[in-house]
Length: 250
Image 1: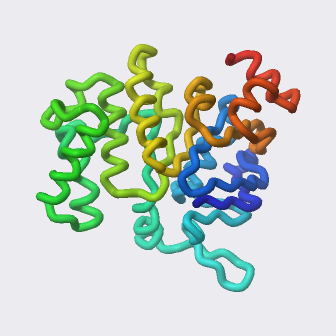
Image 2 (image 1 turned 135 degrees about the vertical axis):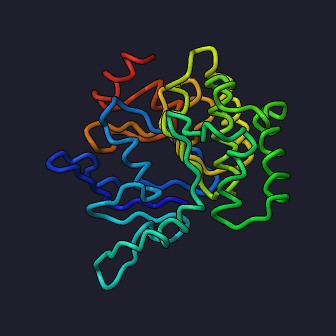
């Protein structure tokens, strides 16, 4: 589903990604861990072309993301074309980014109606089913200000799913939550993984990675330092840098 080959990205003189090569199979859950500033979030943003790349190739479901190739050169797609591509990729951020003036239901139907041109009745029906799926069937008419952080994040997940994506990206989705609210969001993500959704999750939740992920990637300094089976990497890391990091977080 995701194929990265030699993906590099710099902000000015700061090289954030250094020739990242990774594969994520259809239906796989990949967790990415590492210290702040290691490039994890930037890599996610490159996958749905919220950031452009400086070198390499990045494909989702066999198609180049954000670019077309002519000869051996990449040419960036026009914003409207790139936005159409992005419909197939759901993304959930650290911050919930819900529209404060819209109810939970209105937040979930906004993109299908405005971007895909879906009939409102169809979008509402699916939104209600999605809110029920994330355990919020009783909160359809609630505004974000009246929802807890965990509830807002679950609305954000429902909103991403409303576009029927092939791939879901989660950028530290529980890091802004109070500890007692983390579990309710992780439970929704576990159900999503069990349903066969392809997911890439940047996280500090090692228990989730151990239990749910099919593969675990440790990044540092813009490179993939170590990757493998989550239980194996967490229990028996091979690289000294991975050992040092896990020694502080486990």
